[in-house]
Length: 177
Image (cartoon, rainbow, N blue to C red; front, top):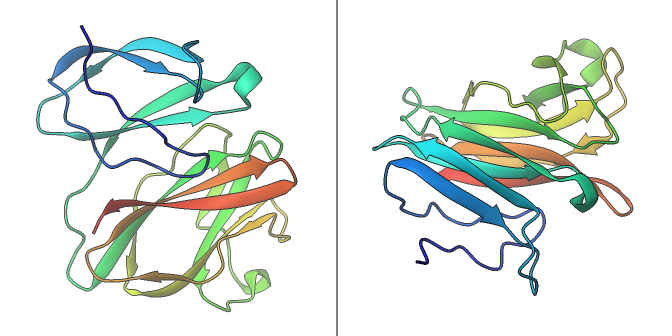
């Protein structure tokens, strides 16, 4: 029996939420064009919740992190941002969520020593323009910089720092709005 199927999700992108019944569910992730699962696990889902399945690490040693998302509305005039440390070459990172153009030397990290494969809690920020920058712990050099990220009131975003074949990048996922 075939269940919910999400196809053609490229590196650094996400599908929309897919509806699944609550309870224990079998999850498989297969590279496009193959039928060999690189993730094959069973997880439990609760009725009325939104969840995200992250495939992390390199394809030779991929594993998943499954989260329950908090898509409750932020306070009026605010947005929410969650950070995922998904760059195995960086390992643990300090992450700065700062107003666009802020000199990182003048501020402390928003999230300190976020381990590879970990997610921050949601961070509430006033609607506006931001940059999310990933550094090695205790350092100020941004290995990953989202560039200017405009956040409107009510939006919820997940920022994933990742490795690429030539360095690093960030994916901005639209959790809500």
